[in-house]
Length: 54
Image 1 (cartoon, rainbow, N blue to C red):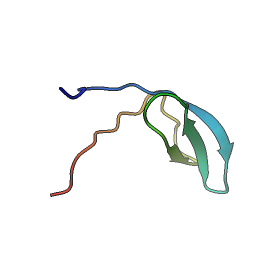
Image 2: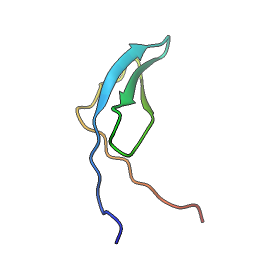
Image 3: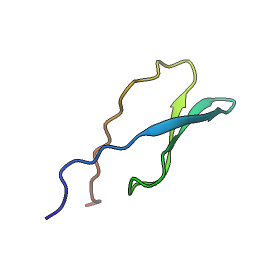
C-alpha cells in the first residue's frame, strides 16, 4: 500500500540573483531543492502533487 501523504521540511540555503533556495532536509526519503522567485511572498507551506506522465 502506498502512502497518501508525506510531509518534509526544507531549510533556507541561500539566495541567488533571482531566487531564494530552500533545500529539503536529509533523511526524509525525498531529496531536492525548492526555488522561490525573489520579489514574491515566501509561503510558510508548499503542497506538491506528484503525477505520472500520460
